[in-house]
Image (cartoon, rainbow, N blue to C red; front, side, top):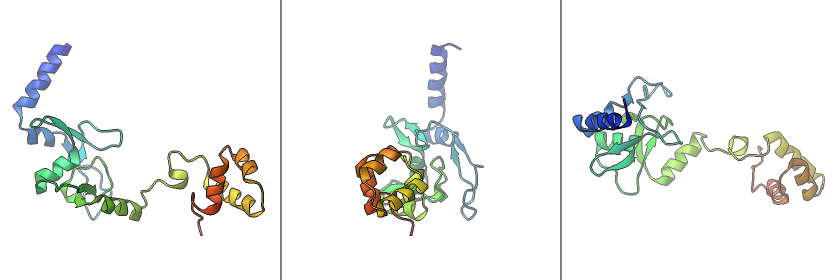
Length: 174
């Protein structure tokens, strides 16, 4: 099948089914059960963003929307301005309306912190130091070693060592 035939087949597919039928055809309802009290996730099998959130192309207006937001809209109606659709199951590809709830940006951040999904310390994608190295740096600072020399030993900046010492970065574990 050439490029023209493939584009034609896609156009036929998009016009043959309603927008809602197209949406649900991309959902697998027997996904994993990440939280038993919620039941299984409904996994989005259409296009996704690099963050794992599903993306769906609507017809009217012709634009891309987040799949979980579209699912919420189908099940519960329009999303009020300024509100986010959050996941109880913490699975970005889940579109099960029973797993979704409305919240402000602050609600979403609070939920993320409460569930320990914040990427801090070694889990952060830009972390250069392990937790053990941070503790070693603290010990050396207490002994009175110069920040510049400590920084050179670990391949970080003097300001990084200073922020570890003051607790501005990598809060102590006590």
